[in-house]
Length: 298
Image (cartoon, rainbow, N blue to C red; front, side, top):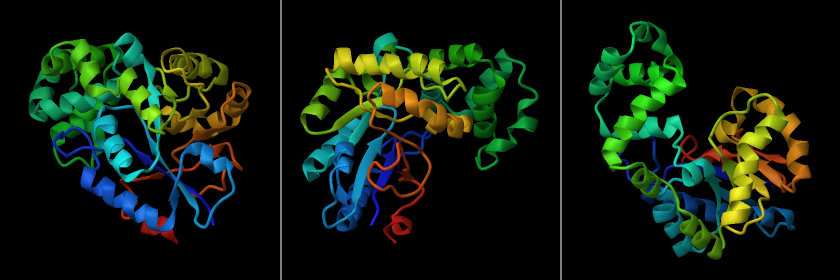
């Protein structure tokens, strides 16, 4: 009898064409399915002896507003706890990571329009031949745009273009942050209602290969935000991108640093079950890829 964790990102109606979101009705159904076979608990409950059922932790990455306005409200009504993580740079510095800017721009502007803009502004003639990594995208312009933003353009080029387009949607940078991310006061309310708040990242970058630098750049600033702004001692960690391509080295090298700073566990993106907190890095199932949880009920 082993425990599980389930990973969520966007929980909202599917009206943004630039993201993959989980419909609120499906989220409710998943909670009901899980409740039949698992006890839905907070991360701290994994330290306690099991009851009659294995345990399940509902986890949320990136701190987008829908997690407060939709997911949290559903969970509060159903009386189940969850684990929500903070990305501190948007809240402290009004800096939105590029991947979220991509989600916004692809949701509010046509792909053909964006590709036309990029061709007029940058030399992107090689992109169509290089964009095979996104061959699953039915729209060829979506394929080209995603490759251009994520791999071809420099970070400065991508940010300049995306931020300009995103600001046109929200009006100001402050409006973007206020409408897109869970606020400090909303995190405080979630905490008061029994939700666990943990560290996700500062800037949402994958593991860089140096555990000490990565801790100082991505984890410590977010931990200080929790401590100084939310009065929360950081004890739970979820790495951006699951650590990225170097996640195995991250598991090995970052664990002792996190333990030294009082962290109890980290939630990975590797699928699988868990045995309480017997391991520091806890496996998680992605909610999008395993509905309706048949593969984890056996």
